[in-house]
Picture 1 (cartoon, rainbow, N blue to C red):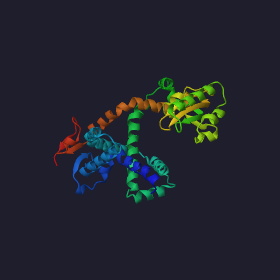
Picture 2: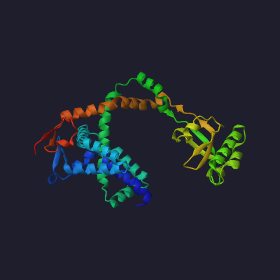
Picture 3: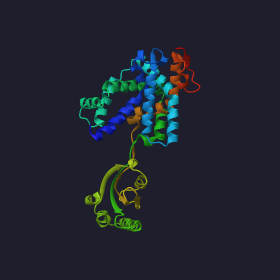
Picture 4: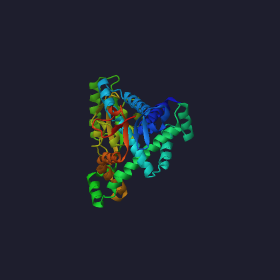
Length: 348
């Protein structure tokens, strides 16, 4: 595989391997591995537990945390690992009980995975997986199980809240959070860039302030670009034009400076350590954020409210599933559960 594809590809594998950690348990050969927990008619084996722990550890190492922070995070994940595997198994069983069909979603996401990894077809993507020794069927099963679990939560938790939302409540939420239901502000920019190459920082700053002063006195910005902007700056050949962008996507201090501009105005000089110089932006055109009509975002609003109000109920729902289930941890493995867990051990 090409280098550009490999990095995204590996991320995909790591993500999918962790989406449904209990899914691995179903693939373990029962006859050659010790059962550490029974969840109704399903099992979790020691090998599944250990492999999932190793996957979590490998992923955490990618974050390059300090040793003490790494140990803290790993201890936290390990403490909850078996309980999480049990809960995932319960949600998978509930999905089967509700006869949830997510095959269309699986196919759509599978196609997206192929596109995101720059393959023209799903067949090419699956061939690349095979070269890496990864089973496409196994990954699809993991994706399917995750989508089923998400569907259970949407239906059984958020769905209960969704059905009780009134239109007045939705309209009130719309007014309070109108920025979330608006098209983002956009600005068309031109720039002058005065770098540090061949001059001191003080000299570059002085030139930048001079350019700003001339621009604010009404000088033609395109002429100022030719006068001040570095000759090797790409935008200089385009009369300073850099294009249109969403203000919310600009990093500070650039975003905070640009969001205050009206069309025709320029920023103060902004120093960029990364680019090695001073940047002056001019707003050629400004398109303010605009609220979408209530009716257009009504469904989105209801989902937003359901999520806000229902998120705290997820654990309560899972606790109910636990109470109704037969969950037994094999004697000797009780220490893998979080302290205070009501799940009991059963003799081998």
